[in-house]
Length: 131
Image (tube, rainbow, N blue to C red; front, top):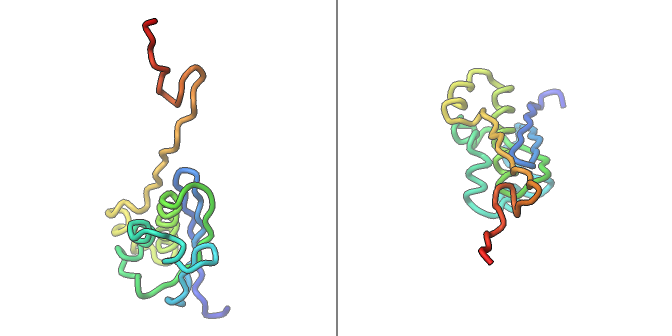
């Protein structure tokens, strides 16, 4: 472990939480113990998850191990993106500008609104009946 690079980043989106660990082993890309491409089904999810690596041109330079839980797959991909951006920033502070310009350091705080009493959902009222 003497020469191993270890950078961590935590990302959140909706109910999803991702803990990201960067490694020097480019071939090693795991999410919850599964290969990255196997865990995220769609291309859109894969692209969204590794966007910070693409923006900083680190796609071919680092690998990662991610532990992610909660939420759906797209929320997990977005959480992983924020975690990767934070880990890359911890590795080299000089990347802040390009990550900031791409909007990858901002935590998307939107979450599902709670259901209110007397309503069907958060804001949807029951259908009005004249008779």
